[in-house]
Length: 201
Image (cartoon, rainbow, N blue to C red; front, top):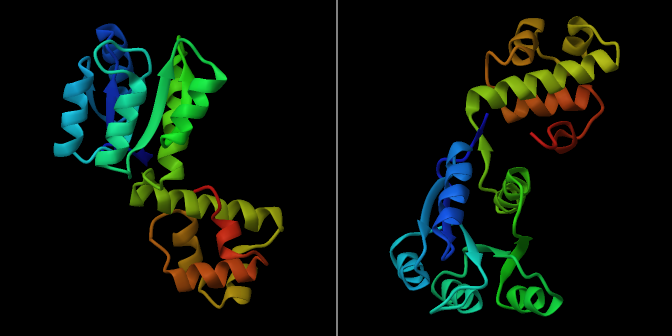
């Protein structure tokens, strides 16, 4: 299962209901969320907390979204900004991108649209990872699928890779973490590049 609890997300929207809804959706999917209805407080929070992603509404009183984006990026250029707007237009989109926003999402948005947008940014930043046990299972599953696709028995793969059938069986079942050396032997025996064999895991 993908791990997200370490990903800190800042939500800034003067509408308390939007903050609550967005916060709940992201928290349910494992993200660590802090929400602010006061943009100035949100900007101050960036000085104290190392956020990874910021969701910022464009139309807000007191301090507009464009100013908030500018201040956030000025304080911490590493923060990836996703702009939320009910009034999408080319000029605003271009301006937010110029200020360093990664993307924007049009309100009202569906839960899956929000999750897809945040997930895409998190993956681009390399923030989402899979826990070790699940990763071992996925690697084993991928190797087994490739072996069966090539109609190879464990013994045949063993002869090609110079690993024992017992070692290969443990790897395919996800029981043991295979070393990079072992994975390289297996991928070579399957006629695949290691990065190609493990792509997307």
